[in-house]
Length: 448
Image 1 (cartoon, helix red, strand yellow):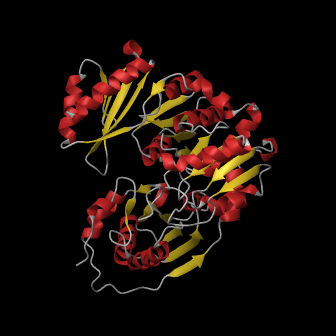
Image 2 (image 1 turned 30 degrees about the vertical axis):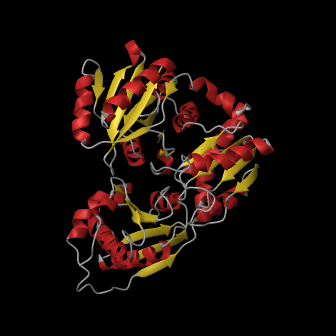
Image 3 (image 1 turned 90 degrees about the vertical axis):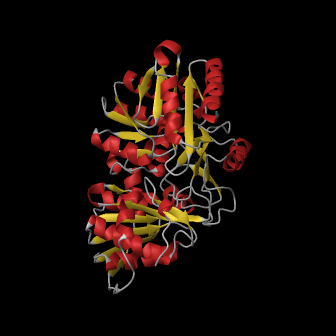
């Protein structure tokens, strides 16, 4: 009997500690369950540099074969964009990426794309896996084709810009020992920029700093380097490169919802009246500016899968969220840090101004970082908050959003974690004093 930790099957993907939660046998079952869930005969498989990736891949493929898959396209060590590109543009039926994104080094996992570009969520596979057994399963032979997609993928990324418009900018890139360390040198050959490299050696132990760009420990070195060499800006990516944060010439991290606005404006200039998707905890300035520029704002629940699905449902042009995922219609509605990067290069070249100056008009409101608080009973606490603020406009798209923006100049969202007994609190106000008062009041109410 195989012991399965149900907590690794998450709302968007599968992530667990290797090799306790995730190991060869679990990978086999995941492959078999994916095959049964999708009915696919063809799967693109890629992985990043995380520990155990090779073992998980080999056993995943065996499970796919046992589940009825006939053909594997092994694209090797790639950023997550590579799997998305292979399914959406190279037209392979389905795809699986072996990665744990920005999680600590102990983790690994799977991100899965089904037929018709549908994201297969981890929780969808759990009921199937519970019914599977390794007994009496005969290992089937399967056709494995190795394919190098880098040249075609780079051509696709560059199709979003005119490289002749890009000036010889000085850019610091912190790959964080992740897959950007392999991709950026290949992409750099086609760009007229000077890149200062940081932590480009692939290493699943992440020796330089945590893989999560939002961790303050990850931000110190790139901020120093940008100021030291007087760079125009910098970028830092997580392990599988789906998260991309921009750092201005002063070494300051830019909130991803504000970066989204810059990208959205560029797309709306080219295709007016298009829909732009963003999640519910983005700043009010996002909705305001999209409307001002003639676009259609599409608000979604938090999570890159939800943003992508909202984008696709409304046939939008692009979308993004605070965790720095940027999705694009012409990328199969999937996210890509590299596409966001080259578009920003073109934008900065056209503006011909420092990034801090370009972004300044969008920083008119005061917003708190997400505040996470453990609670004994999530549902009960949400009910208390609903009742406490019942006189205000409320929305339940993701947790509880209380909106008093028009009259009181503030709003907040409290939503439950998908994996832990936590409440996540986001607050924004037109005045800093109102933000401080509301934060103190709400944190006290949640902790009470």
